[in-house]
Image (tube, protein in one colour):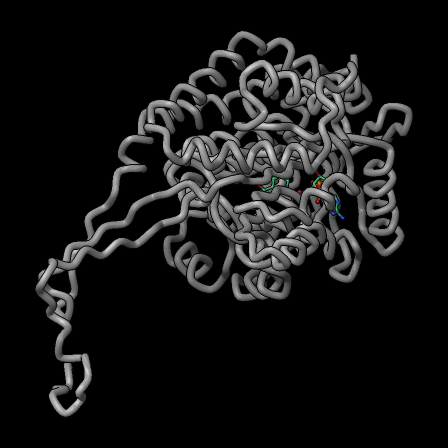
Length: 467
Ligand code: NAD
């Protein structure tokens, strides 16, 4: 299905285009931004089947999953921006402090300018086009660098952008690490990067050379706590969905489960049942399930099987999950128990359909495990105890928290989405995405001929302490 790239402009040419476009778009009325968002919405609704085909070609993602996790997040982001942009972009009046009485002030949201969006492969359409919605809503221009790991979707993104926009507004440059690094060396006005913490550091170092601002949407090990008092069946079903969606290749998938020791057996039994209900009662048939995708490529397949092998060789037991198949990059939904805390499985982001289940005796212990690792992108708590819930919220740090469910917070248009430190810098989605791509310019207006600040001018013999 891969076709030839549409445009072969160089990295430098793309940058020059969007830089000159940014000077023009700065002067436009908000209506022009809305027109661009509407064009994107129309293109997506006309080309849904092409999007589904491209993502399927890349890693057999089921069509309904593409609807839920690639198309819907983008179309809802666009609709939300269309409804709210006028109010987001309106200058916000700010009260004067006592020392500056008589002045008036406001915050004016100006576009940052020419932006670079670097996308990962795991949600290859939504994580390239979603940030573009915020970027264009805020009045910027952009170069997008999709992931080289999902070439069918990347070529389709190139087609979409060339159908819709002049190169001065949005350009797409396809390529791998070298292209990405060439782009990162250029003085963009903002970089929005989604990917791993390791590459996030490369991006931030490169951005420092030009003092370019960054939004880093990264990953890590997102824990789930299943407390003693909870609906075990409900928790198991939600965790099974959030973990095995997209083969576990989701930045906010529950990475590992911390389960109270009094309910561990029951939880394991329910999780096993729920996985059967979701995919197939017969483990050997899951490979044929139309509802279960694949690991993106042989490299990631090998990485995951090596994590599993190492965990098993250090004492882990397989609760469920039959044979993997390298011909098809197929790894079935798996859960492991007795996983050593020193295994790579408990140190690296898993990013695959394997759930280590670790039992804990008291909440302090579970919190201790979470706090011994870098701050996660998401944290999940299942339980009825408001005391325990508050304790977890207070004593841990993570980008987001979702209580009694998982992953769904990604779809909440009014919540900031993103990480903290190792899991990310800055927030995305809705108003927070608009802010990420805007310079909040503080403006103060003094009255001509009047000043309340004369007392701070020399000669200081007249100076009276203000407070
Ligand atoms: P990655 O960091 O390997 O690659 C992301 C992008 O960076 C790709 O476009 C790639 O071409 C480019 N890149 C790779 N190495 C580079 C280098 N050395 N210099 C410059 N550019 C480079 O990530 P990935 O494997 O595509 O995605 C998986 C990671 O992304 C996971 O850690 C996951 O948690 C994270 N992620 C985070 C979010 C979020 O919203 N926070 C969403 C999806 C994925």
